[in-house]
Length: 253
Image (tube, rainbow, N blue to C red; front, side, top):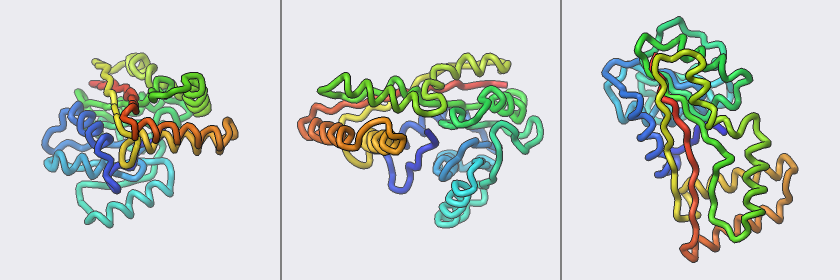
């Protein structure tokens, strides 16, 4: 849906996911990094903490409120000079050709009208031999342990199908090949939870699904509240299980 806010409060499973993803960029000293769809800017702060030797990371988002929020977080965290936030359009980037050593685009392409155009823009602004990390969830493959598989299938399908493209994760590899990167490596990161409680991702995403489906008037509030209660009860009984796949394409220009 969008990059997660995972640092305040800390979400340990999402932090581990991002550590895995950022390692794939093979970050080098003095790298200039662009993050398209930065949301609250948590990825920028984690990146600088993990790789303090980078030159700079620029977080870009089309939404003015998100950029304002990211800048406020940046001020609260000490105004790190290696982090910058700008408003912009992922399908028409305001940067010159061959500007960045690394580009991140996570959980964002679904919300861009022309994803292929955005991937072409990523390739354009990358330096020769630069690396892009392009990532998205395939929501149709979300797994929750349940005692009512038909209800769960309905929840997952309606949530996945009610966004712009809930299955875009499985399309990334082909899309990245289409724009002509010299090398595209597909990877899958599986996030697993065995507890349904804060601060774990399964707790957050189940409530997000519930709120989304109620807002879109696709399912009733009582039915969805009962589902949440079922998940809590299974967690108390040590029967809970959750997994979700993050699809990555590591692209070399």
